Length: 393
Image (cartoon, rainbow, N blue to C red; front, side):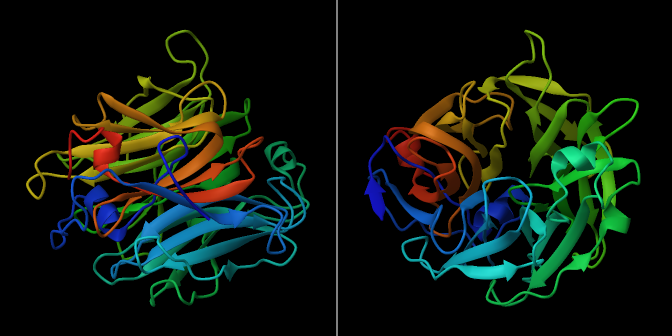
């Protein structure tokens, strides 16, 4: 199903966008469209179909050859965050116009495997997929209270053929999680590769004592994803996050925010790193980025000198409820967000942005009529559409 129009839209992600988010320069793409604004969308996962009760937690990347990979969690028996949950994938080789059938990537039997967070290695072409899991009957509440049978675990797998096949998952918990951390999540969304080749995955965790505290952190690899290490920790009162490399080489982490108080409530939390994610600045709150306490997507779109302007993109439900999915553009490396356009006014939640090979923008997001969790929908749009014809890449 495809819909065209400005009232119900959302966007997707490409390898070139991921490359730009890392600050790298591939061959400059040639836009395949003129000045006419583009907005179109289609449902990729419909809850209740395909043997799954609910589909949640979208993630989107583009491979080195331009294949779009749209990941999500397939929740077998309920909409709950625990239980029998698998990782699913759909692939597109034509900028999201057509999609292959649903593909099962990871199945841990009756247990939970989720929070997909892939990253593309530009130097090898490999796609690394980072995940987190737990026993199917261990809920988040049990894990936080340390009464679960087991704790949260961290996993990795890899594809060398554009996502067609995947290796078995490998448990990397010992290298990426501290003993005092209870809950843990990779992403969700995507990781990035820095200009120096370092791969960075945004994550979050909870610490149980002296009280339950939420914090964000990153893990990183300097050997093409063969091994992973824990980077810097940011907190308190933040968790799900996304990371971008800025034009000066530093990193910016944009985080879901639980802090309370007039100057910080319902605003995204932000921190920066000047050492590749090994340490982070104190948190500050982005007053323009209103949120209902929800995951958001955050990527680089363009970078000088390959393009006329530096641009970052951000998307989330822009209010105090999970609705009004909105995309924003920043021209000053995330300090302000002067351009904002609502993609869909109804119930909406998690999202994943990407730049497609033709320099349109993709977004994979949770969307519904009565609940945000009825579908995962893919939208393709252009910068002309976001800026009402004032700009193109």
